Image (cartoon, rainbow, N blue to C red):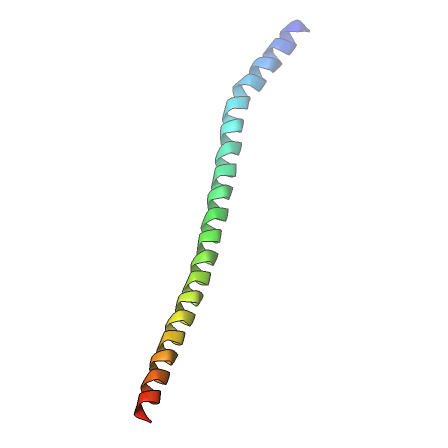
Length: 70
């Protein structure tokens, strides 16, 4: 009985390190995926703000030019 427990314990110890490294790699990949998704969403938001700013500046320039023409 003691031999079976020792063999079983040794087998568990042999599997524990690769399993924990595998789980760590999966967690890291998941975290990187979430970070990249967040970066894409933030970039879209920044692009929308930039487009709105450029459109507003163009509108102000056109309005200033039209005001001087009168």
